[in-house]
Length: 164
Image 1 (cartoon, one colour):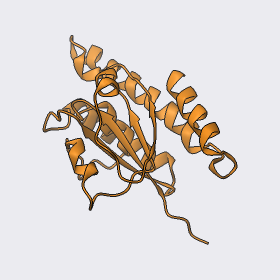
Image 2 (image 1 turned 90 degrees about the vertical axis):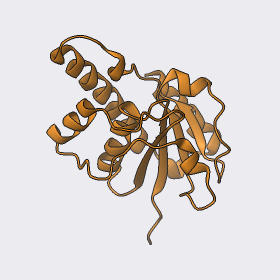
Image 3 (image 1 turned 135 degrees about the horizontal axis):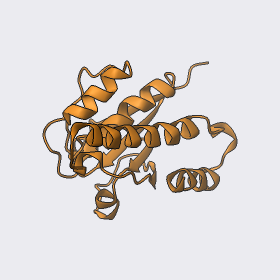
């Protein structure tokens, strides 16, 4: 018996760092059970170079990554999302599009590494911290016993992960 993978959309304002990292992390840790996507309400138009560098250093595929507007995923021909997670506080407070399929949502706020100023080591440290935080949350998420959780219990777990 084959089951279709869950589609997971990570949202942030600029879609240049945190949501991009999460898109690739869930692809790896989801082991084919999850497909990752990312978008932003006001996309920067490019992926932050340190995000790309960090992914490459950790042997993640970076081909095809781009900064996208979240409107792409509200279109009738877009993949139907099962889960939508905001990863920045600005996106959490914004009015999101109506997502086809009524996906489950949660806020997994993470500090913006792209906003950190300083030397390269300081900025890289911020990116590594965001990467670890997203990776830890995603590992917990993909390990949830989805088949045994009703929608209300699953929502509680999604919210709990965002508080960790």
